[in-house]
Amino acid sequence: MCGRGYTRSLYDPCVYFCKLSSGEYIYLLLYLDDMLIASKNRSSIDKLKVQLSYEFEMNDLREARRVLGMEIERDRVKRRVSLTQKAYSQKMLQKFLIGDEIKSVSSPLALHFKLSAKMSLKTIDDREYMSHVSYASAVGSLMYAIVCTRPDLSQAVSIVSRYIHDRRKGHWEAVRWILRYIKGTVEVGLLFEKDVGGK
Image 1 (cartoon, rainbow, N blue to C red):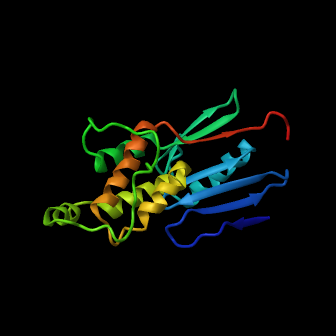
Image 2: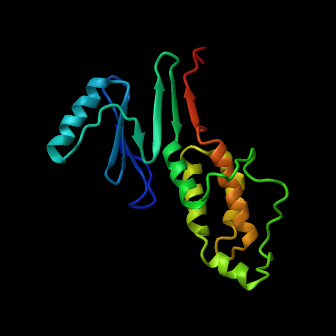
Image 3: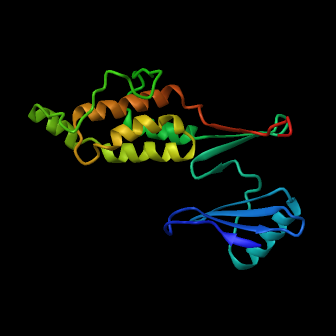
């Protein structure tokens, strides 16, 4: 049995899968020109690579260590896999949070932020300041981090994303707060661990 996972558009990741004669599955995850192949059966992976190389020009990078801005780390002894976005987060901070002197914070969004659509740009200087702010780009970058490895940002980013089309200086300060939180939690990601209890 073979099939294809659901995708919404050409630019969404696509998952192909096939059930092997042994009863195990092999998966091929494809996003533009990046590909991952996963299976418990190593010989089936090698066979699929050979078949694909006949049809497409490929570079075999062996064991995956990085894909789509995510770093993959394995601990085979403890049977753990972790996903982080350390390099992606650092690039995001360099782009949107200028200045090494800016301190990190301990929560994604502080209680003192009272955001609303009615927040006004009080002065001409405020309007000029916001005209040079990459608000939508920053929020989009944060959303990608959520999808990949940082679900802890979901609530805060959901709030600031409401104001992409009508942002104010106070909204931007909230986005910068989220970035300051990331600055102190760059190492945070997802950890997948096998249940050694057999359940």
